[in-house]
Image (cartoon, rainbow, N blue to C red; front, side, top):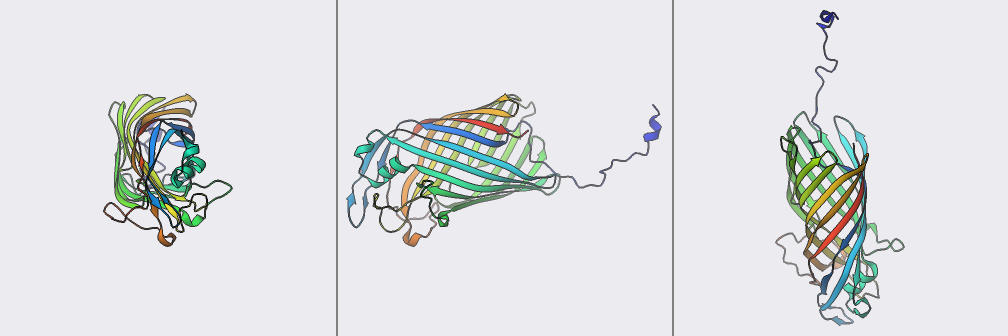
Length: 333
């Protein structure tokens, strides 16, 4: 072949602006659709002393035989271009509490948890906006409806909880990206504002790596092969749940909210079972961060933060326990 005929050939995209991508070598696969089930072991739940105008409830200890619940999640890309990626997110999570002595419980909180459990349903978005070949902006936002509601007795949308995080980052190679920012979050059970650090890294041989979004979660990753990985680390999980003001639970006049926050130390094994269908098996230890109840005077949210001294309406204690979680996932190519 006469190669001289290509001497003046130019690339068609020469001069076009280039952008970094959101992908890191051997990063754990992004889940498009996830269906999961979680089971937690036995734990004592002590409901704190509580007084209403009609009755005085002393501290009461109940024994949970187990707690469990369904977990659903969907992440749908709506715009996927070199210059921007926008995803819509939906999630549903429930916790059902089974007491050994449920029929003999008298405390309103324990009876409410035994009868109704807790639920979270939410919508959100994730936006990855590359600025050039190195820098990017990452935004995450969500609105969640948390409470002891049922689908026949949905609570008002005025009780929605809004969370958001904004980061500015650098991607220096296909094996390393990091960013810093700030977050409005309920992960520790109540409203808080915290700094955020993102750090995703993969070793040169591709076998080891980190996936960190501190303080929310952090994991050490071990890649066995392209279809099998393990993550070891922790995650903070929690929300603020509106407790419905019903006569049979006698909480009083103003709304009450359960501030649920927990630290999970866990091992997460993920393996492809066919094509882009993956199985996830997670085992870990749930450490109770908080399980207190606040009274919202006038129904208004308030900010306590790390240093607020507002007293809780009910101080409870949930014992730590082990848990296991199974998920079936459709992952991104």
